[in-house]
Amino acid sequence: MSLLLRNGVLIDGAGRDGRRGDVLVVGEGIAEVGLFRPPEDVRVIDCTGWVVSPGFIDAHSHSDLQVLEDRREKVRQGVTTEVVGNCGFSPYPAPEDPRPLRAFANGIFCGDENWGWPSAKAYLEAAARSPVVNVASLVGHGSLRIAVAGHRLGPLTARETDRLEGLLEEALAGGACGLSTGLMYAPGSSAPPKELERLCRIVARHEKIYATHMRSYASGLLAAVDEQLELARRTGCRLQISHFQAAA
Ligand SMILES: [Zn+2]
Image (cartoon, rainbow, N blue to C red; front, side):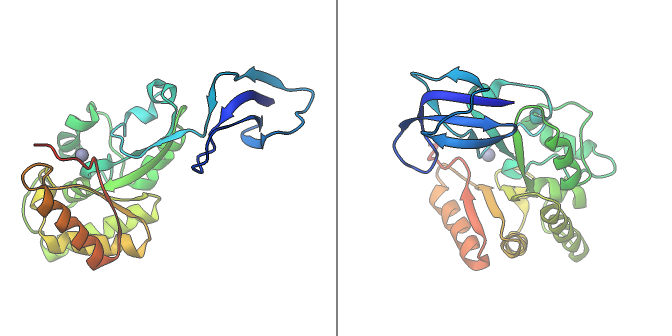
């Protein structure tokens, strides 16, 4: 089945100005963009007066559970890929008894008592069946801590730290696109700097990304930014400051 989007204003995502042109879709893929002779037997959508662009990536989503449902809100806004697992919250790795993880994350996930995946791989397999959007997922530092030490605050034991690192390794190897922290939220907020540094070194080694909801966006904003820049410099990991704003 071929589809021709005819006579729209094309924004190709490369930063260029919009230009008039067509897009030919054959099967699941884009076959032609711009000015070309279209095949005869093709379904045509007239895009005169419309903009045709690649789908938007929502780089900060908390729809970890909703992306698994047949919900159209985001795609109606043009979003075709969502990056979930932000601010330290991911729906994996779920401990054998997933209730502590649900207690930790349900406030942000708007979830029920029926979710939890043992690994990034298991979650991403479920997400790959999403009827609507593509899903990329960060593994949440808070979720990792819940898996090794429940809601307990403060430094982890050496054994727990080994397990924490092992779970991060497993998540990144299993397809998680990086690590997120939520340093305003317990238990992640209680992690000593050394713990974050060890985890960020693993992220750097995997050449993935570290996204953080910082300790403060108000009176402690500058110190919070310094902390994250220092962490990225020291470990070589790529840093994204989530919802960067001054809230005071
Ligand atoms: Zn956040």
